[in-house]
Image 1 (spheres, helix red, strand yellow):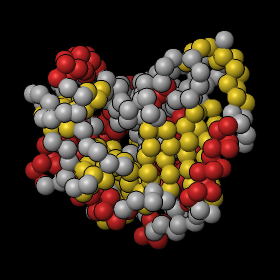
Image 2: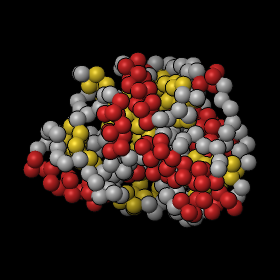
Image 3: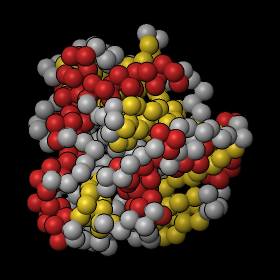
Image 4: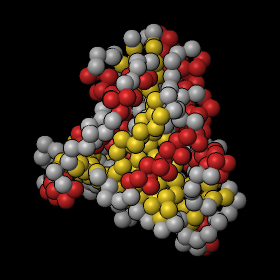
Length: 366
């Protein structure tokens, strides 16, 4: 029983480790030398298919990045393997423009949007088929829109651009899981950004301290509209003064180690469940029921610009890169240098422990 994992970077480790914990062997496809088991891009459907056949795969999972979600669905369908997502749903979940159309058709609350021009200012301009804030800009007026559109169009796989009105309000993430069409909001976290990197999460905080019920209801409507009846989902939304507004949905685990929050503080092993459903194992309703136990914070690290010489820090910290990695400006999620996980009996205690750990982190760069 082999599970093919698409990607071996930090965003995928949660699923790889979860599979190891339950004795499911994995073969990791990644184009970067030394990162996976085979040097095959997670976006190469023919290559992934070949690996799946060679290793007698019973399932595929794309646990932490968007585009490989559709690759996993394509290959599973082609080989007749059990898979939680249909190809049609996987395509919807990996294209923000297709999501906008689906949400309009079903009445899911979302920002005003257009493919022709900004519907209002300030405006978010993005490539509809990228993630991690790649090729995304927030513009205040028409003078800034032209360059933002060019950036988005150059970064887009399809050459198309999505314009969205900027929605004011706190952002939250709903980490959910569905089985047989039943959606369970496992954990709602506050998602706070780096001040000078719009859209790039600096921390996730559980409990959110916000309107979890409204966020969960909106996430369920969005997941249903996209046809996600089985498997994990990761919904980002804004709690605006007019109510929740869905920003995007991904049919995968959160790429910011969100499943660790779910396991440690909400009592649900979301990564383990994603692995189980990917290989066709049954999931009992009791495995989905949250059992909240205190608070948890994930705080992401920012390194000074330059070539990494060494790192240091407390036990709570995990670093992404080895010596020799070169850090530039922090613009997207992949520019982050690592993370800290801190727990506490209260939200404030977890936040304070995270701050203390971050203050003890050391980067030496040349």
